[in-house]
Every structure is written in C-alpha cells, then in structure tokens.
Image 1: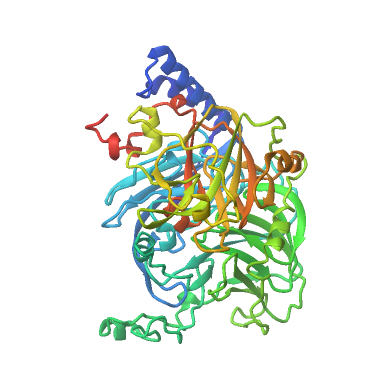
Image 2: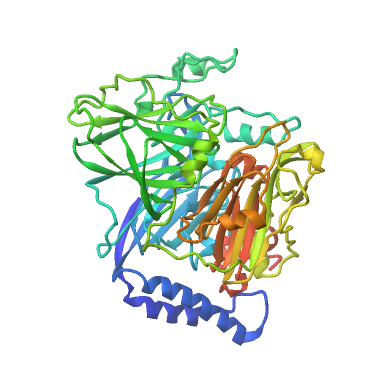
Length: 617
C-alpha cells in the first residue's frame, strides 16, 4: 500500500527548532551539555540544508510492506522466495527529488531477521535508515515492524534490496524511481520512459547457496539458471539438473513425487516481459542491475542507445550498441523506435566476466499495434565475448561527468589514501575473500552504535597491503592465509579520501574475478582504471581530475585496479564492499566511519542486538 501526502518545506525552520529542543545528547562520548548541544546543532544543520534545498512543495510517500515467504515461478520453475506484499520483485517506489519516503515494514518471515538497503540513496542525516545489518541497524526480528524514513535528495534510477545474509538472491529487491520536480528540466529530450530491473536467478535456495560457501570443501551451487528482465525469464523445462529430479510436472504430480521440480512453460508468470513502444517516439530507458552474481551486457536488438545518466548522475552522452551493467549499477539510455514497425524486437541480457553457463535473458520490444505475442523472428542477440575485458575497460573509460552538472572533484591530493588488495584466501581450511588479508565478519553489535556508545574497541584494518605480486598465486606471496576482522576505517569529517581498489589473484592459477564495488552513503569520483599493479608515481598522473564521473558502484577488472575519490562528509558508518553477494558473504568488504559522534540520539528501533541490548546500555 502506498499513500502520498503533500507538505510545505517552509516548515524546515520549525522542524529544526523541534529537533534541537527534543533531541537529547545522544549517549556515549561524554563531553557535557555544550558538546551534546553542538552535536545536535550540527546534525540539525544537515537536515535543515536538505529541507531548504527542496522544491516549495514536497511529498511524503508512505508505503506499508509485509515481508514473507512465497512460492514464485519467475522463470517457469517454482521456488520458495522472499516477497514483499506477495511480489517478486517487490513494489516499485516512485518519488520526486526532495520527497520523504516512509516505509513501514513488517517482518512476517517466521524464522529470520531482515533489513532493506536503499541502494544509491545517500541517507544524508539519516544514516541509521541505510538498511545495512551490522553497520547501521540490528536486523528486524520476526514479527516486528520497523519504519524507514529518509529523503530522496537526488533524482535518478535506484533500487532497494535485502542486506542481511544472501536475501537479495531470494528475490528481496525492487525499483526506486526518483523524478525531477516540476521546476527542473532534464538536459535531454524524450517522449516516454520505461524502467527495467535486471537480475539473476537460481533454483536452489539462498540457504543452500550460503551453507555451500561456508563448507569444507565448498559446495558451490553453480551459475544461475536464468537471467530475469523485470522479474521474468524462461527456463528450458526439458533440461534435468539432476538425475533424481525432473521438470515438466504439475503441482498435483509434485505432491506425490518428492523429487519433482514444478516447471510450467505455459505459466503466464514467466511470459517474457513486454516493452510496448510507438514507432517514431524517443524513449528514456531506466536500467538497474540488482543481480547477486552476474555482470550483465544489455542489448536492444537493432537499436542504438545513447547513455545519458549513470548511477543517478548526468554524463556526457555517448552511443552504444550494447551496454555493460555491473551488479549495483544503474543507467538511463535513450533510444528511438525507428526500426521496421511490422515486427517486434528482442531486449536481451547476457553474462559478462564469467564463462557463460546461463542462457540469454529476453524481453520483447513490442512495436504497436503489433501483438505482444508476436515473437521476434531473429535469434537471441549475442554480446561481446564474456572475457573481452579490453572492450569493457574501453567502455568504462567513456564515462565522464556532464559539464555544468554535479560537484567538482577536489583537485588537491587526498588527505588519506587507502590501497585495498582483493584476494581469495583460506582461513582454517575455509575459502574466503579478503581485503588486505582481512576477511570481514559482520559484528553482532552494529558498528554505528558501537562507535556512538563506545561499546567496544573497534580495530582499524591496514591502509595498505603487504608486498604483493598481482599475477602471482597467493601461496607464492604468503597471502594464502588471512584473518577475520570486524573493524572499520575512521576518517575525519570532511576529509578527502582516495581509494585504490587493487584486484589480486584467486587461489586457482591464472584466475582473477571481476568485482563491482559499492559505497553506501556517498557518490565518489572515478579517477581511473588500469591493468596490473598500481604504481602511485606513474598511474596517479593519468587520473581524470577534469570531469570524472560520480558513481556509487565501480568495476574492478581482473588483475587490474580502479581509483576513486570521495569526501567523508556524511556522518555515519558506511559499508564499502563487493556487490557480488557471494563475495561479500565470504568477507570481501570493509566499513568506513566518519563523524559518528556528531549524530544525535540513535533511534531505539535500530538497536537491541549485541551490546545494544538494554542490559548493556
């Protein structure tokens, strides 16, 4: 359920006054009444700035959601999934820049907690509603209701997803579309717009996936069975995954055969998604990749696309015939429906960066008034070779910020530089992913609360890795064994930070994965990419300090590096991690903390686990 209420932002000053008068010192950190008041005033100024920047009229977008299990068949194969209000993907959030989004979420999962992360939303002034377990809040327990409240301060294409365990792969995700207010105009023209959410899909449960990853030896469930466009795919029901299982059976048949896997090719739930277009019109196509594993390449058969936005930020337009979209990224492209109108066309996604074992995901571009059932006469579109990383790198380098839009990158050298080496390691026989030889383990106490209330000593991971050879096996460099850690990098509020994400070697010979890295609470400037080991003296000279794009997710190519810069100007604790869900679950992530003690009192519903239980506070 969604309701919208308009309210005037002229109440910004009264809201600030109310906040100052009603919020206490916030616990932890001491410093007396004056220090507490200063913290509240600082936080109030952040909220006031956000409110004052809005349009005269802003809306409150109110949603009520229930998270529960559901049987779904998005690719014709029935599977137990996590659904919001019975839907996979979940309900779409539509808002206007400056609106407040309120989501009242009830966890009706009988056996597990849940959180929702609002991917790409900065949460400026509301870091406790970022929805990251172990960072910003405790998981919402079964039977409990939690209300997220935040401002969408930047128009763009975003999405939300579960951020506890591997719940994203269970179907817990949906779209967020933030439009410009009436007094602003896009720097490009189009007639209508379309939104597509792209994802991958397994037939095995998230529990089998996660347990397999944490087993000795690991029991990998394999590549996804299907790729979904707007929650729909088409699995070949004639294929048997196991000799003991069979498809092409009805629910009644499965009730008498425990090995049966229901698969119904005629199920309308897995009919291809249809994209109706009017010949001659120009369309804005919003694309977002919420896949748990797969980097994707998107193709509109026979059409050229003009890329105009990336991760909610304007870029200098450029044309593509196919578009790489890494997990966690979103784009806006323009295309003209100018092809032969007597037929329909394919919209397609293929896997990039991994040896293809998943069929092409397909949707139908319906040229009206053709029937939606008129299948395109051509075969499924083919993407560039899955391991053509030179082509992917060349495309990634085409993104530059549109002149006159967005923040200008700080030109001066960063106050702090991190070099994060990504490796596959072993800990006590378990295969893990690590950053500078530390494999992240989510702590029982959310780090934001741990900092705020000084609950325990929080370690700081190393800023740089030990000596390493990018092309050498971990065993040859002494990096085969890592250690567990739950610490955080702490930055001064307002500090400029450079991060070099250096891709290393997996445990297998000549093997290095593609890793898309996502930062919560910020957009960052992508300064550059390169192959091999990063050399500061040589490679920093090639950084783009003129018009680097602002992003929230950046790919790190095999045996290569990516350089980003951001300003630590958003008080809170923010995950920075590989957006491949399996990799983050196995330790490939870090936490960034900045200005936590500037925050006022943390909302009590975000607490209640670990050392934030009432017996400890």
